[in-house]
Length: 325
Image (cartoon, rainbow, N blue to C red; front, side, top):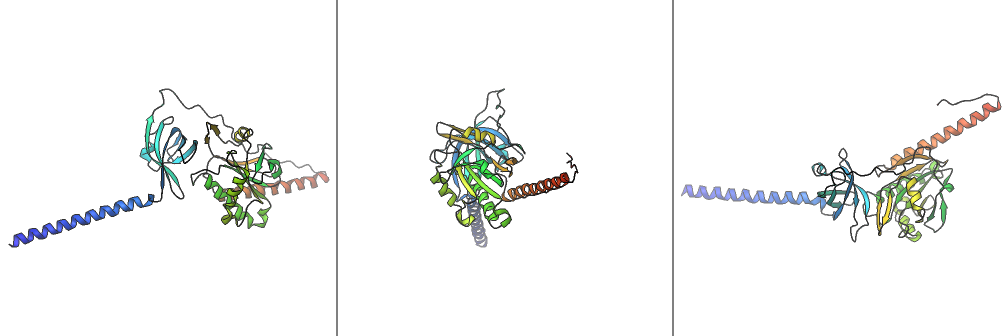
């Protein structure tokens, strides 16, 4: 009798342990899925253009995702390094894009087609802006429908970035625009910088990004900028016929075919004399980086101005001043 009760007790303990294990597994599963509950997922297909194993990223020439976004070239984070290691440049792939509130990444990569043996991606012939290079006087149409020229920004530090208002990824066009809004807000509070720094967001989607659309887009940053930002931050679209020349100079890859858009990223710091100071070919910069650039440009200008005044004074005294290389 005692043995039977012992067996029943052991059976009950085993059953209880199994229930606890099942509950634990359920909780673990819920815990694992919780981070992606609010994420949106999209199926993507495209061709791999480049891979950076050190930073777990790859660049993909994507096909359009119907009802979500046009075709374009994008660089994606790939958290699963083992999955990324299975991919080669030139591969045609299928994958899932996971879009969270503040990040985007790719997972579940499947290679659907390998490039033919011996084939390779042709080298890029895209122009890359160089420090000291003079910026052409390109013309654009701003959010008020007015034609503006880059030469009108002479005398101030001009920050330029390329966007399109329909961009669906939070860490691409929306990210650079938010960073521009933060730069605007900070310079607005600094009386020394307020009149010395201007911002220009250039749309490469002129068919959709009309002046009215750009104005609404600019107003969406009121919370950060403390009101409409248009006194020192313009939003402009490049006329379609001028877009190839503008994109090429700024190292910005752009292509539209069959209604599909393919593009890279480009942000540039232009000195008050209208020359290139620095060019960013990705979205890895932050507001502090641009602040450092602005400070360096303005300090250099003040130093050059002081040196010029000194040279003029020396010249009046018959002294010849030379600058070491």
